[in-house]
Length: 141
Image (cartoon, rainbow, N blue to C red; front, side, top):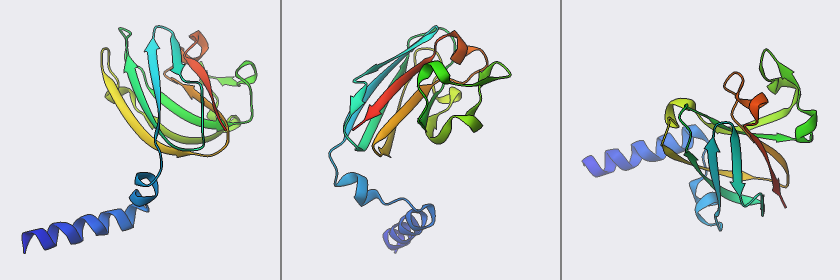
């Protein structure tokens, strides 16, 4: 009986969240390693095929960092700044993120998401970090 309740509860949560786990599970997953330091972000690789992408972010710095994924048409040199941060409203669509509390100094966090063809900004938007160089471009083919 308990198994049936757990199964129904799990299915209900998946249905409510709108997640389609079989859609990601049936795809090839491309891994992108994200190294965050003071004050830089390095991606490996920086070009990936469209579909399921697993980001493995490691904070090698002393400060906490975050990792945001934003779909954009703007090159890095044209990113707008407001109040010492990236002005997200003028950049594009925020796809997903690893928050700073999940990426303190020395931590590694993973994020699985689906990405369509296009240009993406990977950045840390803690005040001052973006302007100091915590940004990188990811190209999805």
